[in-house]
Image (cartoon, rainbow, N blue to C red; front, side, top):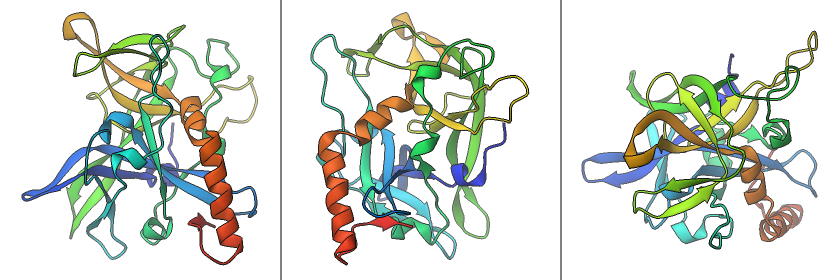
Length: 275
């Protein structure tokens, strides 16, 4: 599966500035949502695993700079990131977070965003031979390396693997603080290492025999390793379905915020829309 450059160029480092340099906490990626009042324009969001920004201050995104090297941009405080409502006991937990992003900050350096249309339709999960994505299908998680050419750069790389398990219902997940919550997820086996928290995970859905190749889809967001009983290493990672990201971005309050931004754009007051 060949990933197009625009998917590789949608990922940035997430972390903190320290006295000894940048400390990585994971990665985040850009997703775009079409504007409804301004044809041809999109809203851009930065998306990552929810625990990567929860209860943390001074989180920054590290991007490549237009002229070479890197730059950091301070991100909103944790309580200003979009989240789905925390679940009541027995309901599933969604470990995702997103924040609005000003595309002018990243466009000059060549960054792109994964379009909303690329999100995989969860209804097509299964083992039908001629449709969707199922157990055994290939996946690719995009992350970053800190490399040094003439100057330091964030270089995208890909870990490949396969869908290992598609649970029938939300599974109980134990967090580092020993709290247990049920989560709707896929389990993925990656061939090298455990992946990077916040990575977008892509797959190429199967189509009818003889049909044109299906476009690559965003299967979901990698949120960390899957541990068995007694913290046993399983070699699997947890991926939240892309449908949960769509649910996050289409909460009623956020849809209203996008309309307000589009109206500001129409009134000549910007609104952070990308062309």
